[in-house]
Amino acid sequence: MKHLFLALALVLPLSAGAFKPEHLKYLKRTNECPNCDLYKANLRGAKLWEANLKGADLSGAYLENTNLEYADLEYANLSGANLKDVNLGDANLEGANRLGGNGVVESTVFGGIAGDVIAKWVQGVSLVAPEDSKVRETVARCEAPLLREEGPSVFALRDRLRETMWRKAGVVRDHA
Image (cartoon, rainbow, N blue to C red; front, side, top):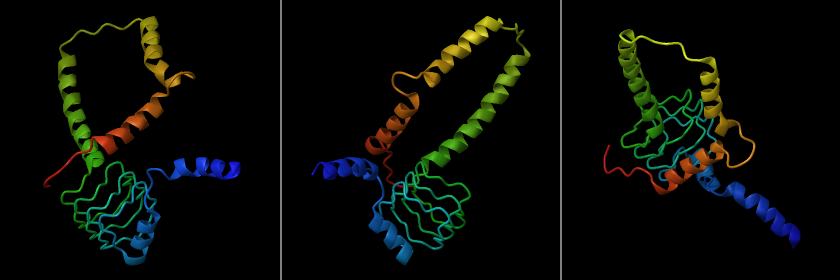
């Protein structure tokens, strides 16, 4: 009996918050799975040409090198999915949650604008070289939370916050 509890204790945390295996099997068999739970599913390199994934939860899914050409992803959740080298040619993304993708584009555009503004501002300012000791002190203070060996990990906290925000504070859309 102790072994059963130990086995359950080891297996249950691994399956919590994962995709539904029967949904993944259904998708592979039929090339459709509307409203399926494929959260964090590994679909790397899958051939999902013209797949019906309308309303599917693909958040956190591993989709690298997947062919989703002409796929119906209307209202699908792609937040946090790995979309590296995914073929989304002519895919229907109307209403799909692509916050991760949008965030990258927006930060790139804003970063470029901010860089241009700062470059113009710096041209009219006389700069003074900082003291080496002050630079080292500032760098050490900034790196301290990342390098500490005791106390809460900022990386674990970030992951926990990301998961909590996704599950409890997601974006609700009523149209694209």
